[in-house]
Amino acid sequence: MLKIFKRKEKNPAPSSIKTAPAPIKHSPPKTDIPLKARLENVGANKGNELISLLNIGTTKKLTKGEYLFKAGSAADTGYIVLDGTIEEIAIADGEEINIGSYADKSWINFADLKGSINRESSARAEAPSTVLIINQQLLNSVDDNILLFIYRHLHQSSAAQIARKETEKTAFSKQTQNLVDTLFEIHSKAKGRSKNSELAQAVIQKIPKLPIATIGLLNKLMDDSTSTNEVVELVKSDPSLTSVLLKTLNSAEYNFEEKISDVNHAVSLLGFVGVHQIVMSQSLRKSLPATPAFQKSYTRSLEISHIAFTISQACGIGKPAEMATIGLVHELGNVVIELLRQQNPKLENLIDFFDTSVIGAQLLKTWNLPESIWKTIEYYDFPEFAPPEKITDAPLTAIAVIYLARLCHQRLNKVSEARLPTLFLNDYLGLLNWSDRSLSSVLGEKVVPALRKRGNALPASLTPLLN
Image 1 (cartoon, rainbow, N blue to C red):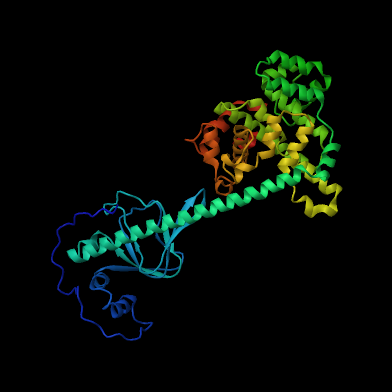
Image 2: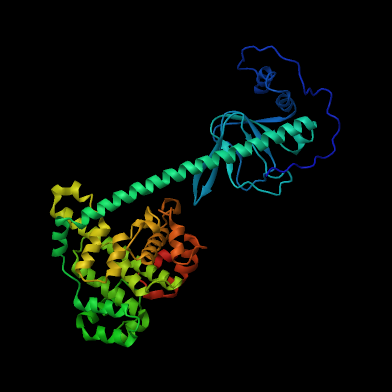
């Protein structure tokens, strides 16, 4: 709401200031005539108030790109754009966002003539421009009629700007909804095609299944009644599990200075979920080809696994062991697609239409992993373009955890938040009882501190990201 401030007492305006000049004969403008004079020449039919302001007030010329004001400066001055265009910009996550433009004859409001309120955005000339400055000094120099003229136009300008913003918001909302519906339909059709693809199924059937002992360990961890001793005994009972665990812990993937020589010691350092992450990840390595694409996906998925585990623990939603497993296997569809390309180079264009999340889910289903895991994988990419209510017959909270874990991982890798798919982030945070949080607060207050506490129990590739 526009505040009208009580003016200070002022001396009578000098007699040299004319508030109602006589009509002036029009003549073609000349380039060497100052802007104020040109406006006076055509202003006789546009109201005496503006002419009076031009006579009394101060104008400012701006070159293209020159700032009129910057965010953080006092909002104690208003402006009338006499010619040119002024663009209003804000900075979000280090990037400039255009939030509006003021063309000629536009009025730019002030918030408080006393300077107690600062600008939240910046304004600069989009083209060479001229503005008339409206400040306390000018307001003290005009009579009541001109003062009312100023406030009336400032109010009308604010009202028009609000109405324009509401119109833009409504149009944008409708456009967004149409886009969401279109993307949802495209992805849904792609999932249907991928599920029924004999080509993809042929490749999936050729991929070796996970070892029975690995599946048995996962099932144990999914059971809330499983004790640490049971996990230790299960790992000890299978020499291959023991070998994989100890060999990995003593490799360059981890930063333990002392040699880890027995399963009990490993469990005490990592916890049995950490032990399972190592066993599962190494089993994946044995089942899938050691291509550069797989190695890159493997490292990324292992890091996301630890983040998903931490998020599940922090919010108290879902089973942390299950979330860690989902993080490990959620990108397997990409590996299958790569194998499809290698084996069928002539079908490159067709393969591009396959849905990698569905292919990954189908692989995990043939490996007899729990339905809650492969169902989550099938829909893990939906939060990027659809709200939760669009996803039916799927474990929504698990999908929310893996979605948030992927976002946190991208931020740790310095991806700008403005470039992330966060249109429906608040909806998915609500599923985790974090409606009052942002991505930055989840990462900075929940994820990073918890991961740092685990120290050397983290894979070596993840530790530098936390710094």
